[in-house]
Length: 198
Image 1 (spheres, rainbow, N blue to C red):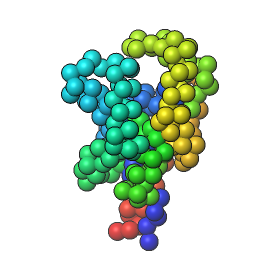
Image 2: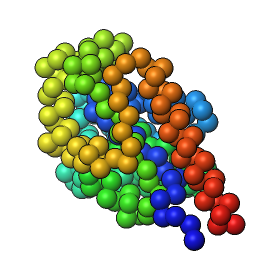
Image 3: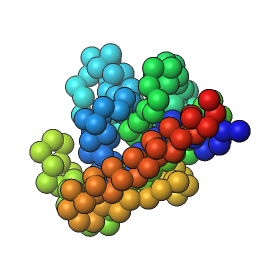
């Protein structure tokens, strides 16, 4: 009998500036299929002919959820995710936001989702957000974004229920080494369970 915890979908979650997208990019460079939930928002912004910037992304993100539900992005992503699961043994999701999205993915995909939270001290996140080359944020802007994502987007739920948590409070190389170790263990687990089932 195979385990219902076989990891086939790795969802990376975290607050802005935690290093989540960097981790997702690292896994993509390792050859994993990566799907960025934020890409759905950017695509919709571009479809409307608007410039892609934090303000327009926020408008579209909140409008989609108001009209289509808090799991709007997950529902739009599901066809792509299901198709990817037919082609790849493990896929990576960057940016699972809301608690409702998490529950929708669990309902539609089953217990094959492993959630990894990337967490970092708030002052370190704010330093990164202020110093990033694209779309830097002041401390006030970063705090406002935090509050909005927690209160309006249910972002805290997936972070709180994560299966694993990696702390990003030092060198990025250390974070990526810990990520590689964890993902390699999950991949090995998936392979072992496939062999047991066959």
